[in-house]
Image 1: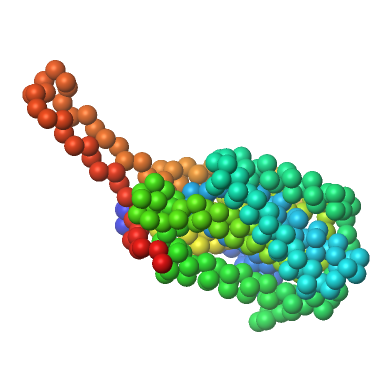
Image 2 (image 1 turned 180 degrees about the vertical axis):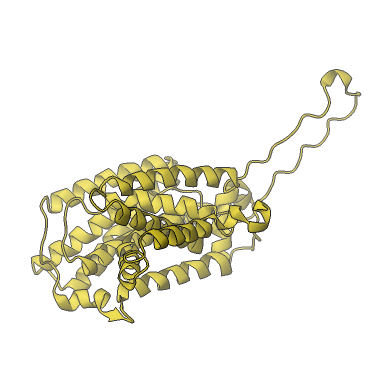
Length: 348
């Protein structure tokens, strides 16, 4: 029965449907409304952008834990330059994204050239970026962006702000790259078996390095979305988005394809978001504890699903006959190493 329902690949969709049915029945006047739909969609755009930023290097088996700090740096640079009339908000936005690209390049240097574990390298980089943001402005920056700049992202289209559609465009571009281009296949090959990918002629170091730069720019774009949505900078902005973004990526990695993928990430993110919203409406008097509890449990469950369902597959070997009963003869050839389920092409 479980195999027929494909619970292993569509558990997030079943969980989402369960939330909609249960909270729709218990809170019909507040849960299944247009207002709640818009609120959940808009509230989670920044987390979704950061999740896609984390997803890019993950395809090469690289972790970028600096995405939250990168978002904060992008926001503080653009807010500082705009508030102090150093430059217009749009050029300031591109300067901020360029600074994020430089930070991602530095992270890539440590990971690729110095062979520092990506988990440690990006975690350390996040602290350096946080120090830079606090040095730039240790206080909140209010009214930093004029309404004309904020309208670039907030002007509504069919009742939703523009940045919701920017998220969809970003997801569509990443999906096409990952699933329909040689670059995407090279990245998954690098993440699945880097040594085999290198021997096949792929520039694995370049792919890892480039994925960290791309991740940094996308995370910086999350800061731009925040500037459109809120219009202010605060020292607490950024790192708090890391945890739900990572949970969504790992949960999404167990969906649809059994590996990290764009649509699985977004489905997992919004399934969890609707569950959180339902609990918040249920416990309306005290809702502070709901989000961290729900995200912590979901991350533990997501990592468990990802590891059990073969997001990273490790082939197992069996010992057949004891040495005492083996007949003398030539040593049997070892079993071939399982290769990632991708088609390698010769790079141009």
